[in-house]
Image (cartoon, rainbow, N blue to C red; front, top):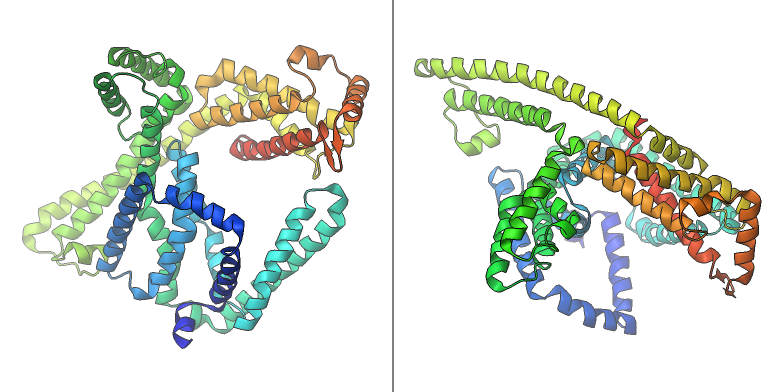
Length: 514
């Protein structure tokens, strides 16, 4: 028991106890047996086994590198396993679905490198007694589950407020407890081992990024290859042409997938595909939003490499150190006379690189402000409709209030559909790929909501509040009803919830313009 307490904290032990108990009970149920029969053959099919080998090999190499520079040791094994199970594997699943260009990885990196991560680490570091954690873990899960259920219906709002108050109070207690322990026992938290535990997830995320990117790239190519329907010889040539065209550029693979009807589907031979890829490349070169920042990004990246190279050059020419000592900063500077000339060269290079780096950062910021101002005016109508809808969103969809539904949702959804169509038709090439995708996604969500009432701008424009209420109430009365289900209002409620969520996501994507 003492060994377990040395490796795991009380919260981890409590979660483990409850997890083992729940899994043990579920394993004896019929649905669990059916799930295992279906899932196990899939999880251990040939493609997944190959993935496991690649993933484990790369992870072992990363851990080997960290161990080589004296960062990783056996005390970090638990943190490594937890990171793999709860971060890395879900990240792979998310990357397959979401990763389409460099923005996904940039946002992923930005999300994990925040001050809040230190605060969350601090809260997780300090735990209550084992008995208290065993009692509090299921209690917290139950309260969170009840809170999630109470969010679904307006009639449960008092219960939602009550559970929300409990969760808030519990959060305040945990924060106070963590801060108190940190102040009273700073030596326990501020030490080398704790610092390693904090840095480890960030280091593993960065070092494992190539295999995550590789998986996304492989998935993208696989989606393209399975759509090639031709003879074996032609099929091989077409695959090679796709590989030559896209290379390791995930954005290009995504572009081919999005334009698959104009590339693969219309290509009856490798020569046809070659011509269609040329047309696609010309189309991509005309996308101002995707290409406008390329030069400034190149300058920034080149100067960062130059600064790093200059620093490494200065160290190598003025030190008798190994690569391992260089990575661990375990070296002392010695300046022999024979190395003076190299020192001067790298010193000048360092100064110039830093100066150019500062210039490139300013240049990139200026270019970004310029294109942002142009975009802001070009998509002003859409941004206005989006913000207006964001402000009108209600905590509970007004399914039982047709007037509120019409004024606060349907009319604005129609405006968003119209303005989004104008933006995509007139200014599509001015936007980045992710901006176009975000607007398209919201447009389709608005269309799905409007289709519950009518189809097409002309028909919807004929409605006013009175005629909409008459139509809506008539549909509610004639719809099939069974307990809490209504064949008209229930699907509409789902569409409104999806639409509201899409509004929140799109507003977050475009908040920079506000």
